[in-house]
Amino acid sequence: MTTEQTAPAPAPVKAAEADDAAAAGLASALVRLTQMLQHVLAEAGRGHGLTPQQVQLLCALSSGPVGMSELSRWLRLGKSGLTGLVDRVERRGLLARTPDADDGRACRIALTPAGEELAGRAHAEVTARIAGMAAGLAAGERAALTDAVTRILDAAPCRTPSPEAWPDQV
Amino acid sequence: MTTEQTAPAPAPVKAAEADDAAAAGLASALVRLTQMLQHVLAEAGRGHGLTPQQVQLLCALSSGPVGMSELSRWLRLGKSGLTGLVDRVERRGLLARTPDADDGRACRIALTPAGEELAGRAHAEVTARIAGMAAGLAAGERAALTDAVTRILDAAPCRTPSPEAWPDQV
DNA sequence: TATTGTTATACTCTATAACTATA
DNA sequence: TATAGTTATAGAGTATAACAATA
Image (cartoon, rainbow over all chains, first blue to last red):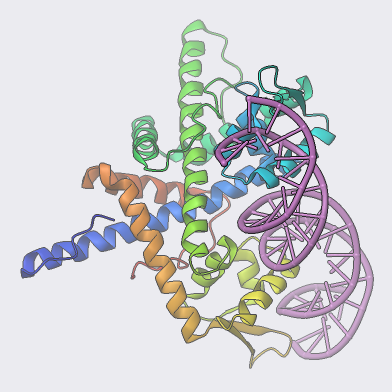
């Protein structure tokens, strides 16, 4: 975004090239990591017959009941698609829609006890798998990694809107 | 995976609890990062009318022609699903199937010039966006982040099978 | 009029199984 | 027999637009 495009002197040019290489290396690593984590999420859900999006939904609900609009923003999903997703998970008895007392148009989505149990189990599984993957790093490196990623997320112009979706407590 | 489940003494219990909290924090951060990066990939593709999976396919092909089986492993996709994905991208003229000279059953998938151009552009866009997201970190922190993530990927039992999918050169 | 949520539609992705043609 | 790739089918995700009910 804010990379220097105007670097007339020879030395800055070399520096810009090095920056580009570093940026490409970081991007490559993060994209590969994303693919691997998507796989981790998919496998964690599959054992319980859940798709990755359904796991994501359960986790987004584990901090308490939420309305469809807010959920739609959290999951970056159109209202329409969310209706279908919620329908399918509701059919399995993992969540329930209740009318909003204050707004006749709205409803609130909440986990059922079965949904809460499954959400907790999926969260624990994902946490354990990621801990296993990061076991080769020293504790200090893991802490630095957590810190760096957190700062990237918090500084992003388009915030991840569900900071509570993955509660710290297992 | 290898978390201590048997910790009788009081002190180790406390240490285990701290470890659990750290593990949950790392998992939470990485899962949130994954969601954000999926969004980055989706947006980078959407500008060109590509789905995230199609972007991934183009990138996997940018290091040279590949057979369907190998591609299937790289993308963690069933042979069947891959056929459809390749069909759709081929229909847009971004790749081509050519029969394998050595094996009458096999074929090799290669980018067309248009596909190469689009792959390069998508790669540059993703790299720029990620660089923008990480701009708040010091250069040394970015390097440490790249290193930590790379080591996680390389140590994982289930390797990301496309280390060349995102070449370092833009 | 603006917002909440649903319905309708079309396309894409994912997974399984059956199939062909080569090796 | 085993492998490479396709076809068929079904369910799920994604995006747009039109719609009903409420604010």
